[in-house]
Length: 122
Image 1 (spheres, rainbow, N blue to C red):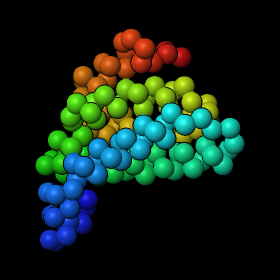
Image 2 (cartoon, rainbow, N blue to C red; image 1 turned 90 degrees about the horizontal axis):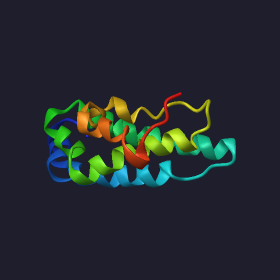
Image 3 (cartoon, rainbow, N blue to C red; image 1 turned 90 degrees about the vertical axis):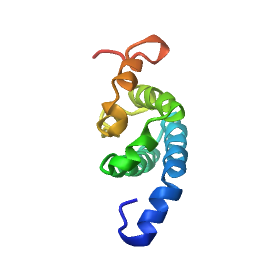
Image 4 (cartoon, one colour; image 1 turned 180 degrees about the horizontal axis):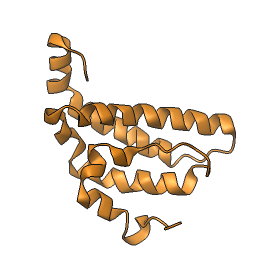
């Protein structure tokens, strides 16, 4: 995503949107995965944080921000946040999806406070 030159431009214009969508689908599947062992939790966190790193990179490039704002991606955001709340162990590091361009959407954030995806206030 961040590569300079023709390769980076080619990827950003031809594949970035699909890559973001596919990665966020993987993030959702990973987020809802139950873990019982510490090693599994660490693998889950590592994968999630790698995908969020892609979201951070896209957040830094204005033309790619649109990849992080579409109906499919917007529907995934509150689900991932809710699964993180419910399934991560209490001492696990935060995945920080809400700190990417996805979290800058008031609409996305408000979805986390209504209905079945409502976050529990601690």
